[in-house]
Length: 146
Image (cartoon, rainbow, N blue to C red; front, side, top):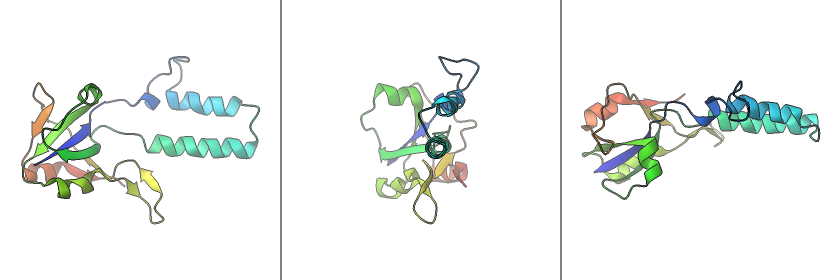
């Protein structure tokens, strides 16, 4: 049996208001910091902004399948706060690992941190944040990022 860690936080920190500047999101604040750094050349600013944009586009989104592991493995407190655990009895761990891979372009550059995500609508986890699904329901909720 395989268990999937599915990201379950509605707003990523880059999309939340910045603590030091609540009028901006974390992403906007980091962009402003790059713009205001007078020690950087224009080329360095462009390079840093491209890296920030890549990091932003690769951020986790609700429903991302982050990890596949054997069922009933050890869990950390941070995992329980950020994820739900989807158990699919008929999928082996060996077959499940493919669902936690990143999305890469043809040259091997990571475009999205995770290739697969789940439609979370209507999933009701138990008190331990577990959801058990038959393989047919899991497959019907599974989507591939583009």
